[in-house]
Image (cartoon, rainbow, N blue to C red; front, side, top):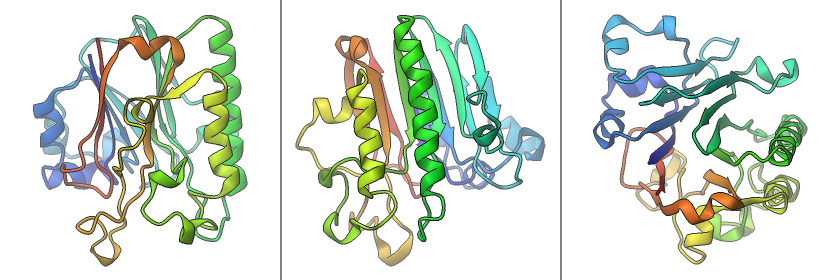
Length: 253
């Protein structure tokens, strides 16, 4: 089974320039997109015709902002939108789908912003999500959290850690929340498989950063420890263009 996550930085733009052709040809069983910046009714007929799989779509209330979509080949056993908290759910940041053997969270985590204006909101989002995951783990569910975490966990996960110590996305308090998930029964499966590999999933559009590979690893698969034996690979497709992020793929036996 193949699950792909990708922050497309605008679904309509991605469709118009053919950026998602790679995803359709790769044909994952589940495709999780973040920052789609649209509602389904905003797509043209031609754009809608380019979506070959059924989907669950959680748009933000604010036009042109945030939003996540989960495409699937087989109908999930259950689909939930949001976290049941109006403080967070108006921004269209989460879709939960239940599949045989696991529950999948497709999430676009908040950005703390350059001025740190939304760091507290971001940390509160992490906290609310962890409470939900703790309860699901207590009930015996296996979980996969994927998407754009908007945080690089460790110095290996960004090109210039020292100069970004006070930058949102690498603040100590943000990194601590990623660690809390790992302390609560989750595994960063890419880093488990490849502890010393340096790869990134996001590059700013400024200063030709992607060509110079000055990037950050912001897109993750955190999985319940019980699912680790099912994982055969995690692939960062850093050669795939079309967004400031690249797709990341989880392969399950």
